[in-house]
Image 1 (tube, rainbow, N blue to C red):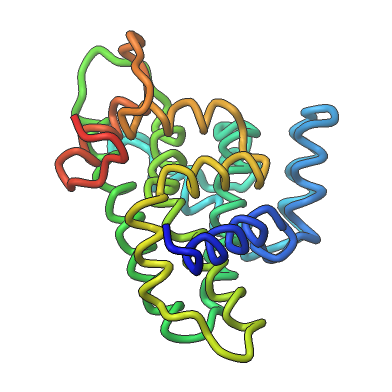
Image 2: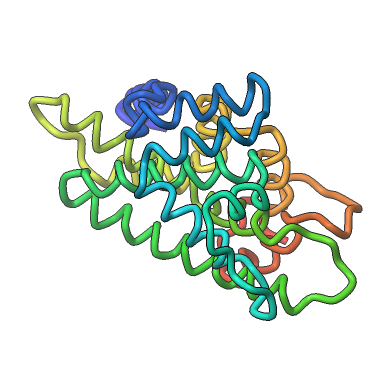
Length: 240
């Protein structure tokens, strides 16, 4: 890396480590995380989610997106949250508020990040569809969908942090610098973001499997389902 790239890399990583700056709606997300860690009582989780109607509607929609076509959709938030389980609830909530924050970014970063987000949604849809076509596996469709929503997490977070960094500068760093860092430091940026933002260990584990950074003999690994999709799209951090 050049000296300038090293400077930007260090400052981007520092911003990524600031969860309050990267994520929106912490008034809901923080107590949700605390409730899940503290006692795991689903009733408390339901009460917290219900305080944000937009989040509640999103979780209900997400849960129905992941269900097999042959199953009846969830009609109530309580039924959806009970079925999802607390880990998937938090992952969905995290991505919901992250996306909300991304929509507030200035141009050209908003346009670039939204392009990554459309890619993420397409990967999630393809991964869930692929799972429903598989026979003889016992894999939670919501786990596959939540994992897929983090497929290009490093790129999304790095661009977001770079936008915040440039907002603080009198003279902006050129966009080519973050492009170079994403191309060459994507693994480091991604794993650093997972660690800094306190995402669950299982998500990180399956992400590593999905990107061929870790191997598994578990035929019911959500990461293996996603790996096929990422390989077809040429998006693996470690090529097959």
